[in-house]
Every structure is written in C-alpha cells, then in structure tokens.
Length: 320
View 1 (cartoon, rainbow, N blue to C red):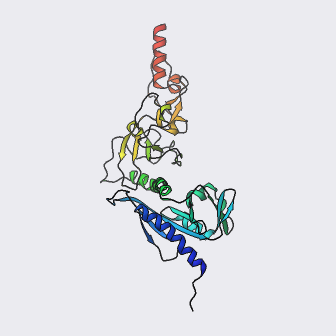
View 2 (view 1 turned 180 degrees about the horizontal axis):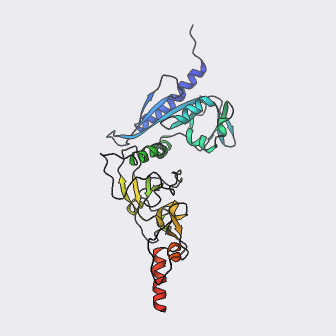
C-alpha cells in the first residue's frame, strides 16, 4: 500500500493556507511543479471587481511545520545555502512563508532583503537559521502592505537597465534638452540604495555631477530642508526626462543640485564649497580664460559662488 508521508501532508496544508489568502485578495497564484524551490508564482490584481492586473509579480516559497521553533519572539527555520542562493539571485522577489500547522498561522520574510541585512554572513557554512519576527504574520492586509516591497524590489532591479538605456546613444532616441549622456565625468557617483523613508521611488539625475539618486516621487516629506516653505510635490522640483514602463522607475533631471543633489550638497559631486556662504554652489575646476574684474580677484572668483561674488562686488563698489 502506498503511504503518504506526514511531511507531504504538512507541506500541502502550508501551500493551501497561502492560496486561501491570495484567493481572498483576488490575486492569481500558479503552482510551480518543477521542484526548484519555489511553490507559487503570484500575479497581483486590483482589489475592485474589474480584475485589472497590476505590473507586479513575485514568488512565494512555503515551509510548513508541526513543531514551530520559537525563541526571543522569533520563529526560526533552518535553510540550506543552495536554496538561499537561488532565492537571492531570483529575478522576481521571493517571499518566504513559515506556516505553523498547530496554530494555523504563517510568518513572512523577503529573502533578499533579509540576507542583505546579514552583510554576507549567510554565505559561510551550509545551513543558516532564518529568524521570522512574530509580528510578521501573513494576512491579506499584510500582503497588501508588502506590495510596496515588491514594487521597491523591482525598481531596484530595473534601475541599472533604465540608466543603461538612457546612456546608450541611439538615432531613434531623442534626448530631452535637460539630458545629455557623458561617460567620463570624474564627479559621477555610483547609485546608492534608497533610504527606507522613501515610499514612491523615482530616479533623479543631477545636471552637474551627472550622478543618479533616489527621490520620493510626489512627496514633500523631508524636502522642506531644501526649499523652506514650499509645499510642492518633489516631482515638481525636477524635469522628467524618462517616462517609464509600468515596472520601471521614472527618471527626473535635478536642475537645482545645490538644493537637491545629495552628492553636490555634500561636496562629493561637481560642486565645491563656497568660502563665503559655505554652501556647495561653486562648480569645481571652473576656468576663466580672461579675468579683468577690478572689484574681485581671479582667486576669489574660483573660491566663491556667483551670489557671493555679486555681494563682494556690491560691497566694494559701495565702499569705493
């Protein structure tokens, strides 16, 4: 007589638990039967009755257990390095779910983000204990919140392709007047990961140092330190130079880097600090072919921004 192993029964209960939540949300999930360490491919749809598909897909891998390991308010799961590497390298984000059969409760982790937080320590050894916070309970509401994580992960993945596309000269591509590709700018900085406080990710490109950085499209949070009193969306501060596909970040031109570019503002980009106002407004390596201004010297012109030079001229003109 063929017998079904209890582990198979537990695994089936775990997958059914997740599928029930997805069905409640009207999201489509397809089982992957090739046994390569992924259980479900999830396609996201709008919550209304129109069943309009959204451009967000992700994978779910489910692990079921009848003996949940709890310690320090976290549930633990031991996973081999080979599977972790596959999930980490996946093109789509992988949501790992640990399902407790006894309590009928699931807990979630985004694999790549979790492993990144370990700073490569997980690459040593053959197995690693993953820690699922007990607050990470898998429900329909929590999955809706996790959709932000999916969008964020996809944008991070596609950012390099978008930048590469923008910087590949093409006869068929008409560049916006605010954009021109340069590949040898010594002030250009690598794209840094976005801050967690940014919700609606978009890319911006500085017109001076030509570096790319992340902004929160349509939000005013945190930008009052640059433009005090201006209650305007962030994307109004920039000129859009790339209208994306649904799965890509938009790209804007940063036309006022002294207020918006994190590299120019900190002196890591194309702007040098003005000795007058101490702000990063002074273009580096500014060259003056001829200098015959009787009010300010050539050296002062190199060290001061345009506003401070004008102030020097006014003050000396009044004195004279």
